[in-house]
Length: 324
Image 1 (tube, rainbow, N blue to C red):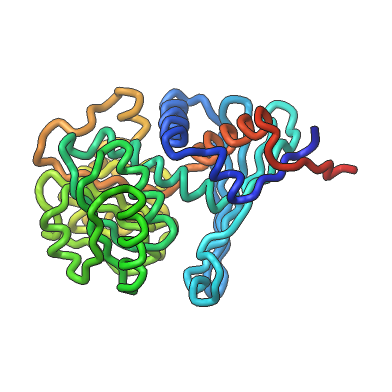
Image 2 (image 1 turned 90 degrees about the vertical axis):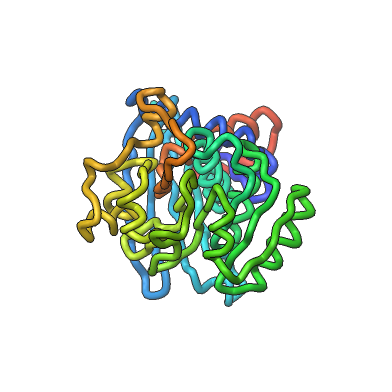
């Protein structure tokens, strides 16, 4: 049937967040069991942004994702992140599909936060602060709300209008009280959950900013130049990366270890360890957990495979014979 082509809107229609969360949790279980190829990651820096390529295989599929990340793009009317996912048959190499990566990246990244929250956020957590109000923030709040039903969200952004826009649009959609705030410290003082999704190169959440029992999902640091969480806070919290090998090279964990604030041996566990039951998640109300989310290619495989299967079943998209 050739190679299936799917646009961003088609991917979004085929991949509801609730289903993506389950698929991503399954991918972390496969990681824990060693049932995958890779993952591998490489990067190429450009003058005003950069490109990264991630690939992995699981369940008979291989997915490779090329993403461009250019933080200045919104000012030019373009998205920060653009790219493509290529899904292949892992047994014969046949290219099965080429999909927009923006939707897959946003959905699978938010899904990983939701999986981590299942294990690490307090059961009664109902108040969250979102730091950075770009496109990823919406998916993050929607996904979090599915596993920890929220009553109030504080939205903070260096550009206040973006926070106000998110609060107005998403508050109505989800029926949650969402407020744009200018004082991040005050918002954190009354929150049990904090999600950071920014391109920051200086720490935004510092030692003393969060209360006992807080769950922090640090999502934005996907290269060694980015940092959102103060290394001193990382050192005093329980750190759970999605993939330790990757986080010590490009995540917030990289800065904490490189700066001598903590060692790799102090990392509490990888998220796959929790999913597989090898290590318990939260065991007390006072524990502060930081999920260092750097994005693992197996998440892309899980999401892309589900999209492909549903597209084939529903006759969505269009196909092309590249070798014709």
